[in-house]
Every structure is written in structure tokens, then in C-alpha cells.
Image (tube, rainbow, N blue to C red; front, side, top):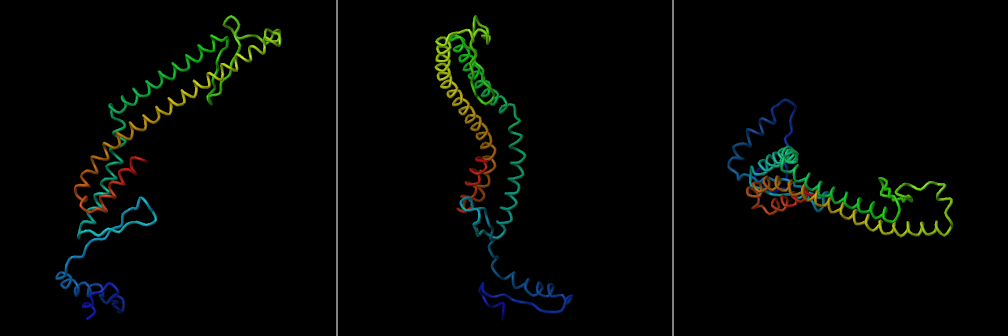
Length: 232
């Protein structure tokens, strides 16, 4: 009678002493009845990229949930192996080195130009690791001694200071331009890495989209998963 109740709001409780074979009895009794029923669908939970605390429930044909889980585990395993290997390929290394050499050449040209501009004004330029600039007064191409500077008149010292301040303002603009070039290099480097990862990820996900893309929730999930992988 209890098995005839077709509702999700009821449960059947089997009582009895331990070691009486309750599990065997229930399984023996229910197996032939279950064989005459429609196979129930699978239910799985998938990650919700928009709201991580609220996973999405997906109903699938019987057996599909187990296959999807196995395919996702295989995807993760292969990506962990294939992505690092792709970064070690000669093609990627050469592309990255070319990008870096181009930036280094531009950087050296910027600093050479700044040093030359300083020398033309009678100064030697120094830049520390934090990008702070300082100027040293030159006399006949050599740093001026303290005795030489002390012997200058106030007017001459003010003239040197004014010239140095104007030069620093100009060089600061050049340094900001160099910082902009460095940000562009980092962006191009990130894009190179992202494009390389995308080639690996797309090759893997295309097959999964073919298998599970007819289920809209899984299609959306795989599409969002691609974006998440590339962004991280």
C-alpha cells in the first residue's frame, strides 16, 4: 500500500532488530517493482558564477549526471597538465621573448634619451629602483666638487637650481610615458598568455558543448567556466 502512494511528501520506514536482513529484504522486494517503473532523471548541482552561495540544480536524463561529472573531472585533469605544457612550448617562449625584447629596447631608448638630455643641460641623471630621479651638476663632463659649488655666487647657484628643476619636470613627463609603455607591455603579455590558454580551453570545451550544449543550464555553465578560467 505504501508503495502505491505517488508523492514526494512520503517516506517508508523499515523497522526491525539488527542483523535481520532488512536491507536485503527491502532490496529484494523493491528491485522487481523498480524495474517496471520509469527510470528517474538525474539531478546535479553546478557552480553558480553569479551567486556562488546558491548553486544551480540541473535535471538530466538518467546516467547523464554521472557522465558529466566524469567528463568535468577529466577536463580539470587535462587542463592542469596541458596549460603548463603549452607555456613551455618553443612557440610561446619565442613570442614572449620577442615581446620582452621590444619593450626592453624601448625602455633603454627612453633612458638613454633622458640621460643625454640631462648631460646637454650640464647634469648627470640618476634613477633609483623606485623611480626617483636626482641630478648631479657636471663641470667639463665630471661631477662638480663641493668646493666648486660652494665657490659659486648665489645667482649662479639659483640659475643651476632653476635649470635642474625645469629639467626634472621635463624628465618626469618622459618617465610617465615610460610607465605607460610598461603597462602596455604587461597588457600585451597578459593577452599573449590569455590567447594561449584560450586555445587549450576551447579545444577541450568544444567537445563538452557538443555533448551537453542542448541543456541550456549546462551550456551557460560551460560558457561561464571558460571566462572564469581565462580570467584567473
